[in-house]
Amino acid sequence: MGSISIAALALLVPLFLSLHQTTCSAVGAGDDAARNLSSCLTSHGVTTFSLPSSPTYAALLNSSIRNLRFALPGVGKPAAVVLPSSKHGLRAAVLCARAAALAVRVRSGGHSYEGLSYTTENRVPFAVIDLAGLSRVRVDGGSATAWAEAGATLGELYHAVGTSSRTLAFPAGSCSTIGLGGIVSGGGFGLLSRKHGLAADNVLDAVLIDPSGNILTRDTMGDDVFWAIRGGGGGSWGVVYAWKLRLVPVPDTITVFTASRTGPVELVAGLVHRWQFVGPNLPDDFYLSVYLPTGGGSSPDSNVSVSFTGQVLGPKRRAMAALRRSFPELGLAASELAETSWLDATAQFAGLATAADLPDRRLGSKQYSKGKSDYVRSPIPLHTMAGIVRYLATGPPEGGCVILDPYGGAMARVGSGATPFPHRAGTLYGVQYQVYWDEDAGEAAPVGWLRSLHSFMAPHVSRAPRGAYVNYLDLDLGVNDWTVAAGGSSEAAVARARASWGAAYFGDNFDRLVRAKTAVDPGNVFNNAQSIPPLVNV
Image (cartoon, rainbow, N blue to C red; front, side, top):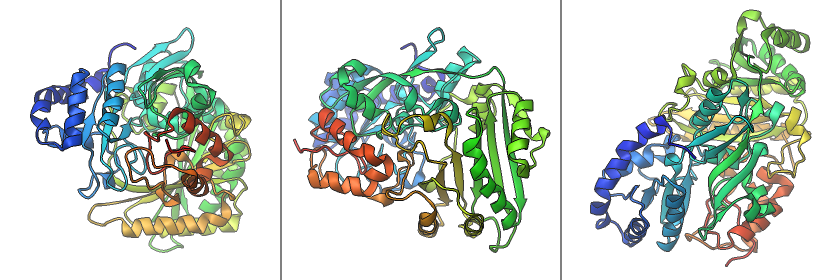
């Protein structure tokens, strides 16, 4: 797979050194599970792990926690954090956690909206297998493919691809510190998806370590399992060690812009209402999203703001001509557009100064937040859109936003059952809701407001089921409520999961996911609050 990235090495070397120095002294202070895990790992030659009594423990655990509500003292902490640096070490981590009767949580980038990659429900003892040491990316420009370890961040992947060729790219999200293992497991929508599909649509092969430690590829894991790992959610199937990715062509020069507008509610609502007919119907190589901040004024009738973010796979003159023709209401000016490379655009959308910052997983904000999602299949009427904008204007002062992402294009030409991600033809756009707060302010008021907004939106979004995006995990939809490290499933558990969150995330694909889970992990070793349950309890 090549050598570990420089940025990852700079971050991990101090931890590796400390882990080697402190593991032995930490063992005696741990409970039986931690002691058994430590002994097993050491016997397999894995020394890069940390127990709660180790000086490295807190730093390693917190290194990838992006949502600070899961770093609070009241949140259950793992019996160990294991940082494998090889396929052999990853396999040993899985087998040793099982032998120690610990639940397994696998963390790629730490961006889980509900912290499911590094927490557990019901105080079940668990270990975190952190993939940060598995971040190698090998690009083959001749075949337009890449092998990327699942611990690589999107920034590391984009940097490796973009520096190898100005005309190759990969379609995934905009945040550079998101882990590849997590985003691909949930589908992976991004700015290139209308042209080239989801991240999961561009997976050619994978190396999966199953609960028994078998190392499987596409040829040996079976069609259902290979289908399931590409969009069926993380934490259900085993651990993906690496993905083989299809790289996609992009022009040498693309166009990007952010057009911000401020005005009365009626003006902003009119722009967003019109966008519903434009964004999902532009040519495939156009991406145009909407960003609506909350708390825009002291009263519902204050001026509010909206931003339209665009990426066009072509020159500025083509972008201007198409958008002036299809969306003249936006009044886009040539000065608002800029031409750049795809690589530099990824840095810009990630909020970074330069593309050289993309591999740095230490960048990016950490905050207290809660998110939810929806899908819209019919345009929302203008008067209703005005009511929504007014609702947002009175949102929590700590901050929040609603983001509308256009679907259509290549995504709509893929069948709803081709991958577990079902939100294809007929979906106009996705809705992401977010609220943020300071530690001193607490979460009760902003989260309560977010839930009220979600209820307010119910008549205007998809129904039967009301859809949601699994990469925007939302435990409000329901939880599995496992009380043991492994096992515990039943037909009733499958029915509960389907009725609550399963249909929302996966629609009619849920039952095939259950079959895949039953095939690869009948003992429910890989589980979390919203993991796919097996049909039988073994």
